[in-house]
Each structure stands twice: as structure tokens, then as C-alpha cells.
Image (cartoon, rainbow, N blue to C red):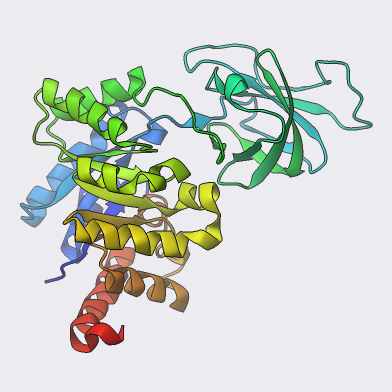
Length: 364
């Protein structure tokens, strides 16, 4: 029996009771549903398929987690789904509310009459209307996990004019990070509240809460759960921002489990700092008796390949050596070609790492 649990994201590649049954039998303990791709109600089939698979496999302890979006800034819909912003261009972020359905994002001339040579200024709508009040000249803005990097040049009205430091394709619904700004967004929007209420009605085991910044965010979710009959649902606090890491102990104390979300965390604090921060979070959570989950790109090469890289094997093993209680894969099972094989390989690596940890102890 493994002590470290394997968590897997359900997506198009495995949203079938037979495949999910094989994944459970291979070692999946927890299934994740990502609500960034649609509401809880719109993804009810994943819960139905998972429960059917768990019943077929006889796995009474198999659990399911719904991952709510939290206060995340995103690019709104772009005609044709994407535009390309070249390095050196100017780009305007137009701040709108989540509900607002304003002017479509289309390539335009600069709205303030400035001249940019032969460049076109793109106007991209984002779903946070107060962003224009919270950034200043020089603020760094990152889109799609930092693939596109911007610097704020000016703010006028609801438009933020930015210089494109690192260009690339910008797609609809991609995340927007402002690492050095403490955003004043309410933690739970109406969509998140509806998703949590749906989770209560459908007896989900855990809700994972994205972009937890402080203890109060966890308490907000707990109050909503408890007030509506969801006392039994566990809260997983996802740490993926500078502010969240700085409030680690208070967040861990309020939550049932902590998740190190290395994707957005790497964007927020810098990729090179993630390993040490991951170790610190893991150590603190274990000291406090809290479960800690490590996520993102654990075995990413198996999205396409049948075997992991040696670096991925080392990454997984080191997470086990450090004391992680759970390891979560995302795209590898949700969209990858070999979801069952991913779980099998993860199980093999974890079992060996646990054996080595017991045999060699402090040497590791």
C-alpha cells in the first residue's frame, strides 16, 4: 500500500467509466474536476462517470474534488479565439466586469492617437473592471503563465496601455497575473458560489479553492459550506501567489489540505524559486499535521509519451522524500494520450520512493 495518494484530473481523454475504472485500479485515489473549463453543473457527467467507475472497481475510498476558479483575472473572448502580439508592440487591456459584454477584442489603432510606427495596437478585454485602479506605470502583467509579458505604460479610464516585452499568441480565457499587486477582488464571485452550492447538493468530497491569498478567503468558503449543509466537504487551499505563500501558516491552519500549484506560483514568484518554496510549504504543512498536495507538470512528457523522463521521475521521488501526501496530475490524464499508463507509472515511482525513504532515511 502506498502512503502517497495519486490525484488525477478528469478530461476528454478519460471521461469514461471504463477508463476511470482502470485508473482507479492502477492507483488513482482522488479525481479532480477543473471548473476553469465550465460550471460544476455543466460538468456533472464527470461526477456521474467517476462514481460509476468507483462502484465497478469496488473502491469505496475513492474521492472526487471540484476545483473552483477563485478570484482569477482572465482574457475575455477574442474573435477567432486568439491574436498575436509581437514584442515591441503596444497592447491595451480594457477592464470590464465578469458579466459585462462589451466591445469585442479586435485589432485597432491606438485609441489615444499615439503613433507606434507600423505597429497595430490590440485591444484585449479582461474580466476585472477594477484592474485599472490597482496597477500603475511600470507594473508587470503576465498572460498565459507568463508566455506573454507586458509592462504598464499608462492608465486612462478603463484602458491600460502596455508595452509588449515578450510577445506571443494570446488566446481567449487565458489567465492574467500581476505578481506585484495585491488585488482587492472579493474571494467568491457569484459563479463560484453557485458551483459550491452545487457541490454540496451533489455530495462532493472536496472543493479546491484557487488563488487563496489569506486566512479570510478559506473562512469565506467554510462559512458558505457550513451554512448550506456542506460541513463534511473538505477545503483544499491552493497556494499560487506571493500573498498566499506569505500567509502560509494562517492559510494551512484554516484549510483541511494545502495544494502547491506550481504553474501560477512559478509565474508569480519566478520559476527558479519554486523548488525551495515547495519544500518550505511541504515541511510546514507536515509540522502542522496537514496534508500537502504537489501539482503541475509532474509527468508532463507522458501527455504524449508512454514513459516519463528521468527528470520527472526525480521530481516525483523528491516530492515523496520531502513529505508530500498527495501528487496531482492535470493535463497528463485530462488531455493526454495515455491516462491509465500515467497512473501506473506514477504508482511505480511512488512505491520505489517510499521504499527508498524507509530504507535510507536521513541519507535522502
